[in-house]
Length: 194
Image (cartoon, rainbow, N blue to C red; front, side):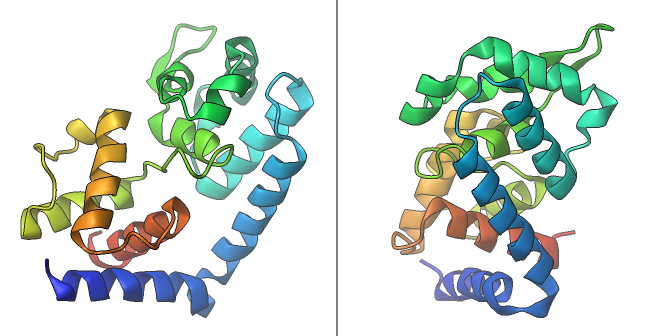
């Protein structure tokens, strides 16, 4: 295990938690948490629309390209509440594999991971390009992962979950929850791996 890497990740978490630079992100996160607590179900159009719009705005997922209302309609049609409660990873694919009414297809993986994560933070993790870059960077450096870690392999959600679990174990970060792991990896990637 590389103590330097563990220290860099802990510093990235402290940067997120304490710096002025990330204050607005922390404020936005509080809003998202409140909205998802207030509107936990996914069978009401207004609730789903609110959650989708807030995530799209705060995380810049660019859903307007595909049609926000069409994404909402897809989520409503999936009946995902029970699956989200148990952490069914198949929900990620169901939300991510999107085709709008004009036949435009997209893989809304980052958005889907964020949507599911905010419904069940213990079972889901967030996919983001900076998280991806950090995972690949640290695996290239220290070989923490038991499988071939690549941009393509991380597009499989089970692999993403496994990579997060393995980096957590390898660097002795078991005390940190999924949200904290996300902050560590995201800030490190944003600050160092552009």
